[in-house]
Length: 238
Image (cartoon, rainbow, N blue to C red; front, top):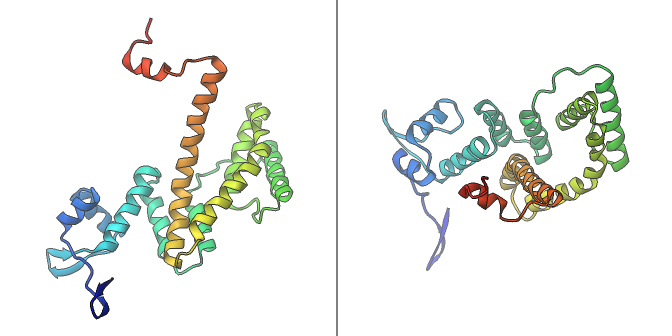
C-alpha cells in the first residue's frame, strides 16, 4: 500500500486488526470466521502469540468474496472451496472460468436415452450455428442438455424451443460481462471478476428474469400494478 508524502510516494504498512475488528468490518460472526479458517477458505492471520493473530485488508476482501459466493450465490461450502482454489491458481482467466463452471454446474443425472441424444444434437447444432467456441462436453453444455432432455421427456417442446430465441440475447449479455471484467484491470482483479461475475451474474440474471416474469404475467392476466402492495397489506383478500 502506498500513500502520498511531501517527499514522494512512500510505502506504509497495511492496516492490521484483531479478529473482533475483522468481524465488525465484514459482518461475519467470529465463530464463522474461525470455521472458514479451519476449512482453509481463509488464510491464517499473522500470529503474535499462540492465541492471537492480526488480519489485514486481504482477509476482508476474502471474507466478502466467501459471503458473496455462499450467501448470495447460494454455493455450498464445498463448492466455495473449489471456486476459491480456482481463484488462487496461477492459471489464465479462461482456464479459471472453466474451473469455476465445472465447480458450480449441478449434476446432470442420467446421460443416456433418446431424449438425451436428441438434446445433445440440438445443443451441438446451436453451438455450430452461433460459432460459439465450446463443445457439448463442457459443464454448462451438459447442464443445458439435461434441461432440454427433461423438457422433451415432459412433452414441453414449446419451452425447449426457447433456446434458439434466448441464444442471441445471451451472447450479447456475455459480451457485456467480458468487457466489464477485462477492461483496464490487472490479472488478479480479472480473475476475481471472472469468478464473481460468473456466480453472482447468474444470480442477477435469474432474479431479473423472475421479475420480468412477474411483470409479463401480470400484464397477460390484467393484474393491477398495486396487486403486490394490496396483497401484503391484506386488502386484497375477499
